[in-house]
Image (cartoon, rainbow, N blue to C red; front, side):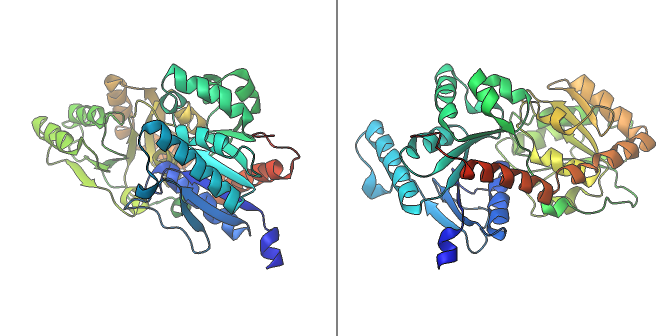
Length: 376
């Protein structure tokens, strides 16, 4: 029992564990720290269906107020949420809490004040979308310097914030999903173009369907498969039919084993207007596909890719550029294979053991230093 008490205690704070990119990163990190001998607590505001499972040994705490705790009015309920989360830190006593996504970061800094818990905030998406208006940006610039740590995903996102944050922030990558740490498929590749992502306006799957349609006659043996679901699923299905390629565009929804779904394909497309550092893009590169991706404002794409070396980068929203890039890869199998082989080398750079150790070293430095950023 004495050894248990001496273990460093890390908490993770996020909205829920619903199956998404940020949530998967948190679960993977939590599992790593558990395996390294840390005490780990996962604090989520909600509990939803279709969530990632936590390994045995990680405590789950729900921070949202219950029906019995609801008050009359938004201000009173906000105060109740702050008070409850503050109570959780006082009760659980983690040495450090990692938060992510928008308002969660504000809550982590404010509610850990006058506790022993050191807050580390992280911006995992496009900073301008997480903090979309002047008020949110002002709060970020005001509160983030009081956190003990600030983690960004890209160098470009550093310049969204004020100079205090720019100086204090570190850039730490996400580790590769272990399912994708395997040798590149070297058999005959299927004549398939693939994409993975939620079917919403930001992902701009419409552009890839229209680009595919423009090349359909030139490459009649190829099909397009988009894995994922969302509000535009029916619209995209109808669009493919209207463009005369309904029998060559497949929208099977979400799949459990993405690695198996894409590893034998030829080309991967990411056509988003904005992303943080896309896990889907990381996984496609690691699989060794020929990748075409838009240059998103956060700098997430250029953190992972060098145009013409391990994939092709195009301007966001540029259908003509997408058509030209697709034509270049489909028309030159040797070049396509060369890009794919270079892409697969990202496994070395983002290997879970290597990346997780970077996070561990950063957290240990924060927990070992004297003083505390928030409430000190």
